[in-house]
Image 1 (tube, rainbow, N blue to C red):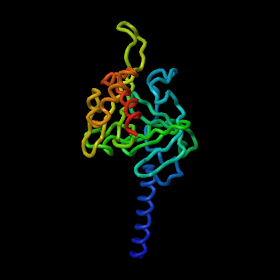
Image 2 (cartoon, one colour; image 1 turned 60 degrees about the vertical axis):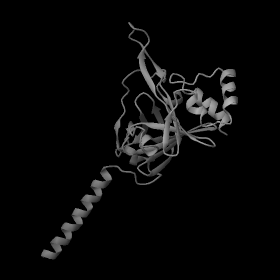
Image 3 (cartoon, rainbow, N blue to C red; image 1 turned 180 degrees about the vertical axis):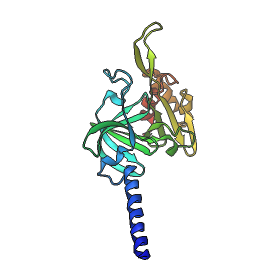
Image 4 (cartoon, one colour; image 1 turned 90 degrees about the vertical axis):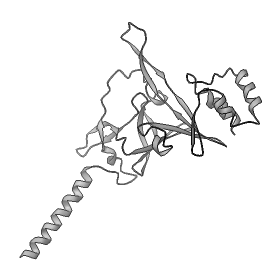
Length: 229
């Protein structure tokens, strides 16, 4: 009797462990989006009518999520640039649908397909030790260097006495060269990488009235897309 009782007990324990593992909703396969349930319900805190805080000002992006080493294709989601959150709709066990914030502890990166353009984002700590592990960075690879764009929208009041607010971009651009990472603050942060093209690049900056600086970092991408080919 005792051996039989021990065998039955072991089987019950194993089943309980398996059920407990499934209830945590960790990724199981590329095709099962329900495994992304590991996240909290998304509740908009402010008006989203203008959609200014969302990447590409869209709430129905299509792309791919990399969640704890698992790839999920053709996912519909939203990227909130003001909170650094990926929001997607899932179907729960009881067949109800809800919007959740994908668990950032397990989200390693994502890609967005927008017509002929593709945007790739990777979590900071997977790109460089000096980048924030709580943020996602767009990776742009040209011929010679890797460029990283930190996209951010900040909510500010429209005026001092106003109760209305707006979103304004606070983007940053970095260059990764080997183990070195450089925050682009002036045109000189770029020019020294292209000593043979420095004269042409300066002329291009003047002609196109580029203002490469902390307030206009995206002008750097315009310059780089022309010369780092």
